[in-house]
Image 1 (cartoon, helix red, strand yellow):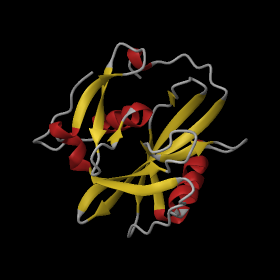
Image 2 (image 1 turned 60 degrees about the horizontal axis):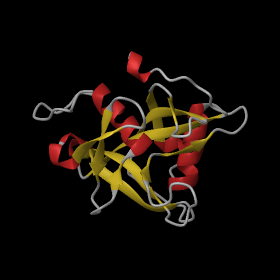
Image 3 (image 1 turned 135 degrees about the vertical axis):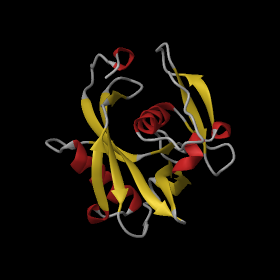
Image 4 (image 1 turned 180 degrees about the vertical axis):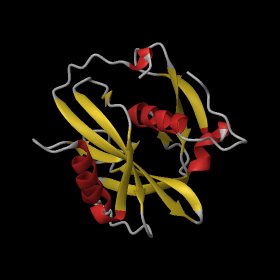
Length: 183
């Protein structure tokens, strides 16, 4: 892990999120969710499916459980293909473990409307379009990360979700015609 991304942990818990790839309309796409506006924590934000790990639960198990609870996507429909470095949440109280998964077969979602307003599915190529992102300072660190547009005007991907998304995009091959900003 690069030196500027080494965090001092003072977390009190562990969480996991699932960076989910799927195929929609013949395009490799990213599946996120827009959280219900009525939620007291992060209401209305775009995020990856996921949440806190239960005692004794692995990050992979938590990510799959939360994905089923939030999106209705059964564990059997998701293949975990990778794992990224854990990152702290804003309050530095959780160590968040991003896992990468691929949805096998058709995308059949059953949203938990208490938690999720809607699914947000965007082609992976969208995130490489310079018009779809802007750079903003990240927390109190001396780096900037992109925020990304979605298909809904005014709804952006930012914060920890954007940080994880940026790291993911840097790790996979970019389309030949696209470039990502470097940190």
